[in-house]
Length: 221
Image 1 (tube, one colour):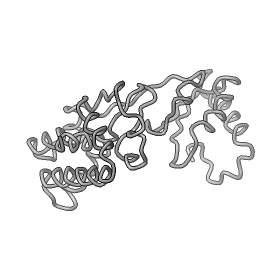
Image 2: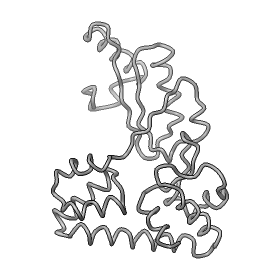
Image 3: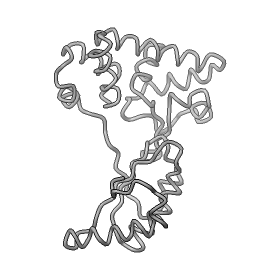
Image 4: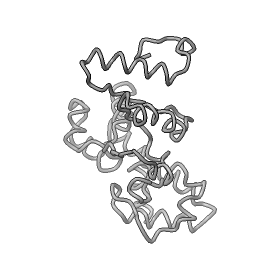
């Protein structure tokens, strides 16, 4: 769609089509190499996409490519692929979170939210929606989110005490840094914790997927 194509079948071979579009863009920009940003859809294979775009970006050098990938979908094998650089997009700082919400949230309530849930833009969007459209106080929303996370943890480790021990141990490390050694690999990769913790293959650490899970685990200690 960004190339003004509404029917993908009209493109023919997609790699050739993008290659031709890159040539036209380079000429229009007086020799500047175009940049394509690809946002991977749910269910898509990052490895397959890499194999397809590497020919354009590296072999034929027709364009630069940025691939937006959820950190939890990366594997060790992907981080070892050649001709790749990784850049982790960080969450907002506290001051950025205040600016992002346009100061529409009570400062004390937003500070409480940031301490419990964090500064991820998706979480801030949900907070704004709850306050503006559901007419809920930020404090009430924050507390409900924390209680829900605590119950989710409790349900996840209910049948296996080793999972609880592994999660509580992970919570002793700062949320942003995660745990790089001394972890229980078999427990953290258990299917019951799939939506709670993740392996960051770029930094080689285990982390909570959301800060609210880190906060909830600290509450269970």
